[in-house]
Length: 251
Image 1 (cartoon, one colour):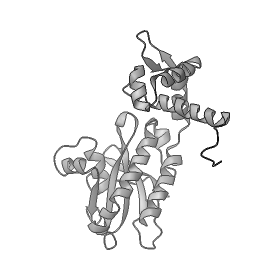
Image 2: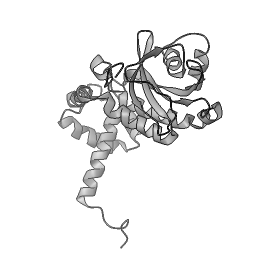
Image 3: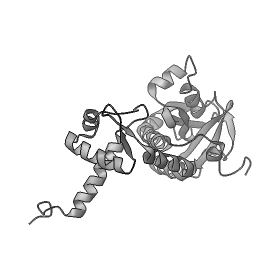
Image 4: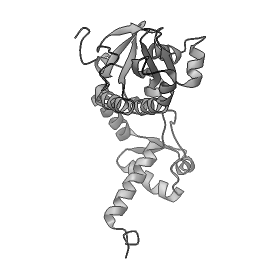
């Protein structure tokens, strides 16, 4: 008998039930105060009877609650998990591994910036492997209106006019020698809770090595990392404790 033809064990069925229960919880979005059984069934792809059985099980431990009109909402235990996640999440724990992934994929330095007043602040950084590279120290403050990271932050903060309209339409920006005549970069926005702008991620290096044609080849990679960062940041509180870079200007 092949492995696929073997009968499922109780353990397999238990794992499947847990995963289905988690997918029911994940069907809720930030704008969903409550969802009907039909909508939960549509979003998860499970039969209504399966959704109802699992929803009732989740309600036993306060992960879901049924409203008077028969719809379902997230309950106290689900909120507690979210609060624990927010309280213990450290930006660097997620940002630095993804910057490292971006640097390895592109061969260039990768940086994450957030806005502080009228500047962009370098809060995380992974230097590229090449001997000649663009260098920015942790905690450094740079202008918002020069260079692709700052322009991206302004664009997705609602700045009007050009080049910000074009940046919003494209979803990224390429800069060739705008702030520093010898530096080129490509940046993309990173979002936090409720899809508010959190910062910008970029790769940068010498213009001689990163003409526009090469930066365009890295576009999908940086957009993918920006998407991963955004998903990770959705539950992060924008507190000074979490955003403070590990290092000090001039270090």
